[in-house]
Image (tube, rainbow, N blue to C red; front, side):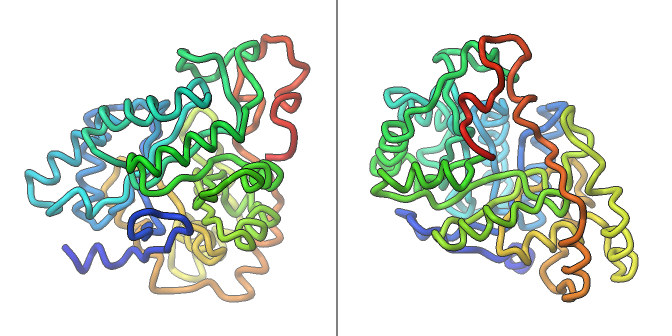
Length: 325
């Protein structure tokens, strides 16, 4: 099993209080539809194949099932200790208030049956009315985030040992600069939508310059999710490259992300798909392939407008969001 696990390389995080090594590929648990029994089987399958990074969030409703799967994996001997795994969770908008951050992570840890997570992220660069876990959210409940105080509370989570590293999700260059301005522990990771049809070139360069690891969510376009798209899986350029290389479109798309210097989280309930996703580390895309992919027309899949319900006092989400994602 160790030879399997070794197939997924690791990357060092900037500001970790642990060893700071994050596997470059993880399994995401934001499933739509969410089927608890299938998710648990998928997590156990993934562990048996060598996945060691698992991504969850308070909002996903999957922390409990991930925690149960880890307990079972230990009983089955699939892993020897929790320390072999890298667990990411996220702070929901309604808890993105300075006094609620530590309690929110403590609640996530109870759900996970763990003493710490390896990475804790601010889920979105926006706050909302405390006490409501809802998606999409009513516009009238959205609030501008107090980045300085919320980030200070994230740093406190790391100092308390509740998490080994901290970071953000869905943050633009401008939003990251706001965090850097007050941070004593800078963010290690920015998890964003990233795929060959939404390449985020400016953001990737900015994050490299500031030593922030980019993690891609929806690297295959979230096909099948209620907000997802076939844009990646049915892209003709990717299909032609895949056919030429004897690879799948998914493998080409995931390999492209790795070659950007980014990391990724994938989602699947199917063991054969999970295995296929791992088979991207022993080959590369040619310069010609990379150039063809760089010319793919760009289209964001997860729109800010989908983040909120249509009724509310704001003309647009941008009034609070303040800048490109």
